[in-house]
Image (cartoon, rainbow, N blue to C red; front, top):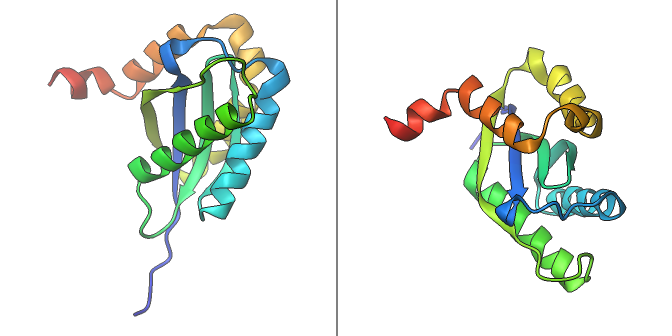
Length: 147
């Protein structure tokens, strides 16, 4: 059977459990590097990954047969297991169950990459709670949740 060509960009955002600031500067790059390598092994294309103390932004491209729930389960589940196994963080590390997933048009990919790349500077001015509320209102999630 001939498969079609698929490229669907998705901006994923997820947080640490209770939004605790556990992703300190000294462990962040190692965690993000591991998530990228684990994703590659599982056939998940991570274009860009970055984040701040309590959350992660990831730009991925879905391929045919992949779905967001499964990808999030693989990325979050395996990375929290790895963080705990390697004692990267002193104590039990967990991700929050919920996450954001928003489609990105081909013309918006560079803008999202830049946004993800500049997380540290971005969060000097705006905390994650503010960013979270902005995501909810910008993408109409409150309408979806309440309606």
